[in-house]
Image (cartoon, rainbow, N blue to C red; front, side, top):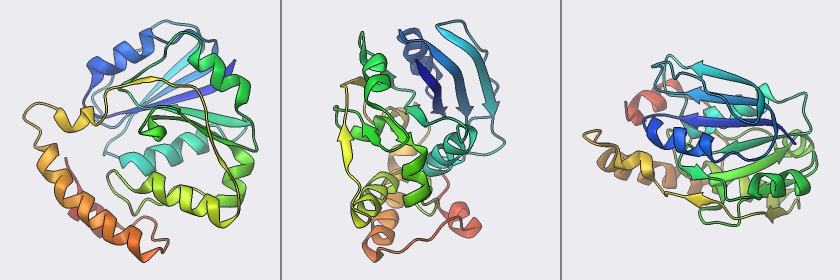
Length: 209
């Protein structure tokens, strides 16, 4: 069983519904972080309970992942999936078999961080994701670099289905052009190899919404 599965979403609620319909493994608690704040209606599935959290502002990828970690702090690990992922038969169960409090297991599908299981002992040693990388990109490569610095491995787990960068394709959003600017700035931040954390002025400057 997956103790907690957290799914952040922004605009692709159509893909979120598809993702949830593909869940074929028992889940203790399913949490949807709705960064659109529109209020998604919950559904039924192989989970014991479901919580939808409408956010008043977009937390971004790192902020959403950090909230996932905090919500699951009593569990050995947290399972996180992008809303544009689909779970092939047995994939979630495969994650449950290899995930632990001492490991970081990412999807065998590129980009690997579209689905991952992060153990709480890893968080204790490496910390949370750097929210300076807002709203998306480089937060994962930064975490892998920090894993390497403390000599912890990143394990590749089951493959999943994934529509890469689907949020950027949201009709009439302009996210694609906005990402060109924020991706470049996040790349500069990554090259500095420093921890920056939350900066309200950076978030204002980088916001897509």
